[in-house]
Length: 638
Image (cartoon, rainbow, N blue to C red; front, side, top):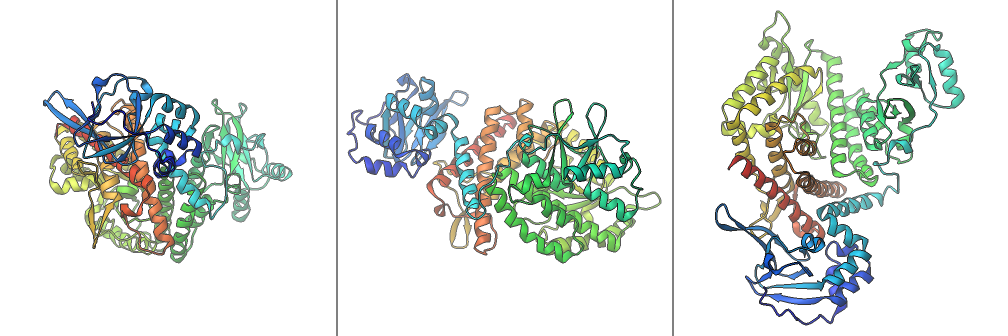
């Protein structure tokens, strides 16, 4: 046991202890009365370097500790290699041993002082009182890093809210928005009668249903304007001839965010809400979602998607930053916000392509590909171009002849995207590069060589080209290509191990003693939240996903799929998702602050500029990345 005196003097300065606790989670969210209870029952204990604080041999845990000064190191014996491994480090303001204390069992890890260390400590009875009385304290004890994530998201949300005002959450179920008793009609009803019914009920849409009330079509005021302007059909025609068939439907338990993303991506303003039997129970409109929230994602996406000039697209990019602030204020988390940004980026890219096809159609069908973070739907406001082209060679033409037509077109698109804020790729990973404007057969041959010859350059490429998505054009050629690629990787254990070894080099920025490992930014030391923080998660998860046939490219979705397949333990997957999301949240907030100050965007931050909670959660998030890499190391015997 510890060399420290177990009857160390109880601190007399309750106010000083409370001041210290307020700087650290979960105490920063607790009431003063509960902090005072802790301070009044606390003793201050000293442990010299190397002293045991608690041990598995001590029996059931009876005390709760908070590090006041110094550091605690967790140690476990590795029977396989007959050595002692350091499993974690606990530093200033952090508490232990939660799981053992709550579970009323001995600790499984030896806790040892790393350097001279002081800990505040309370007995089990005082801990139980706090656990019962304080909701923030109980939440932290039960959920750990999950509650830290909530605190960060709440702070980001409240900061954005200051300039925007309150709103409904994007997590609100659609059943709260959906118009009950929606206006419906049969497929044979004449258009003029359907429009009269819409007018009588002051609605902008009417749902066409079958005899079982299953939605088969939708007709809106926008459809009516198109019908009249383009003389598509007479007003006495049955509505089935002019309706939009197979309308988008979501279940009642789906949330407002999912509806908003569908509306933004597909440029429609209404969707049907259905029950488990796919029977219509309501309609949600763009106005329902966003007039309440004063956030017009769908309108911005539609404005981008219908812009008639490049200069309009350039000017609209500034609105994306304001929308990010608004979405944060309305409860969107970091995963939702990056998908919002990616969706608006997709709409912009598609519109640039459409405008160029109108001006100078190359006359060759093609699929516009996007790679890397855009391919994973994980882009932030700091973005560059990683794109390519896949085409099927028309009969009577060679692949070089097709390229001759597509490359000038791609060159113009790349330049115009740069004007819209998508900076040109320094590595020339762009569709205007002849090596990335390939036929389906050429892409297939390229991936065969890529997988079979695991060169250092190919391993660098793996972080780009193995996260691929179609943004414009037919998707089937890419789906067929990716099916072949996934199949080859699953059968190639050597390539998997090479990928794992490459991913293992992306070390989180923590030293052995949980200090930050910096990169140099001029004369300052900094952390690179993308390369040092997010990349270890992205690279490691990609290896497991490709090896286990997970087709999605998004990192969080890959983790969910790997948990469903039993590759990841669900608790581990949740901890890794939370660690990844915490880093992304701090990164996005940093970007917003830089924009507000008119400074250039960067992924570098100085930890000294962060508050104690943010520094702590960064350390915890980086530690989760280390745990994920340990699983990679064990799986592939690195």
